[in-house]
Image 1 (spheres, helix red, strand yellow):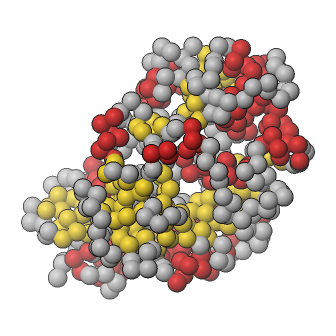
Image 2 (cartoon, one colour):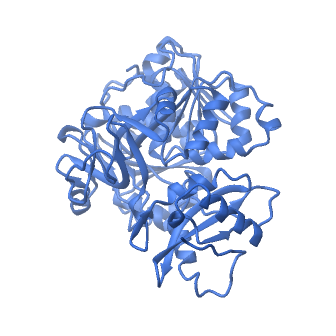
Image 3 (spheres, rainbow, N blue to C red):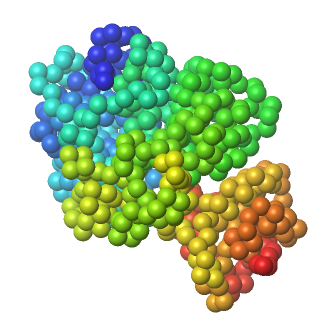
Length: 511
């Protein structure tokens, strides 16, 4: 796989990073990475030292990534939506010797350092960063050492943990499975925050490795993404299913205003995609939608549009035989068609550990396999299907109900902008199915609409799966990567049966 340095030699003046206010050519990126390595070494960092990064989607983020990759440092990008205390926990836990932050987050970085006694170096982009680079040579480094990246899990339960990999896993050869022009020149639109695993891998590392320019979005907006595709002739992008739904919700005149014919591949993952939503995306853009199943901890499967259309709803076949299995709680493989936990194989040479948490690491593994709590099944042809996360499972009347299935049906209704189905305590049923709905612009919530949505579900789903109640909210709570915080909703509506304050709602029977 080519390196940024090789592209700097082959296509020195070609754009590597296109930001909203600045662009970097491959030569710029290569030289600034060299300068930053020297600046960090001058400040006492040596091979293996950890570096924390608190920065928005801007060219300097990419320079830090590549400096760490060639300087032998272990990089931990930090979610800048966290509080200073939460960021401080990560800076301390990863044992960072240096923190690099942009000016907007400099105060947050300063506060985070107070919780991290090992972090003695602070460099601020827009302040001390530029001077630090200007003081160093941009010539090729006399010595390079491959660095690593340690990302932190989202921490939906307890404190987030660093996912630590051996150097061999970091240096594993990448295959150009998404069709980048190997002579360079393609353009990839980065839609998500680079501190997340998927954008960092699929919207930065992979496109730059094949000479594609990365167009950075500072924050995602449906129409803005189409405008950037049109303006820059974008060929590739990575999205999550929520983005698909928001794009399809745009008025037809808005979507047709922009030329998206340059697109070659749209990669998506991170959450189950409702079949009707994905089908509409393929109808609109053509058979260029590629789905993967993976996580910070490992990679499972992928599927192209043609195969998906033959097997709607699948997330594909595993990359390698037995790379993914369906098992019970103990990891015992289940027969095809039976729903269970999804396990991904992680051989010894590639195995991750949760940093400084042997117990959590051990609890994730069953032999060579680990699970993230996703639930699904494998069909007789070896195609993997996801049903939901085990944490989202609703058990009502002793029957398992997977909220993603209900969400997918409700998203087909023209009044629904977005939805999250949850289970709330119920004395009779154990849990009751409640759909929390964010309506589309111009639609008014009402008891009549709630009744209509329940009836809509009952026409398409077994009645025991259907919501007994519809709750309307102005905005669904979201993580910064687009996923809905179902845990927040469950907490909010846990006492729904006894709470006096109600949003507009309607009850539906079960038969």
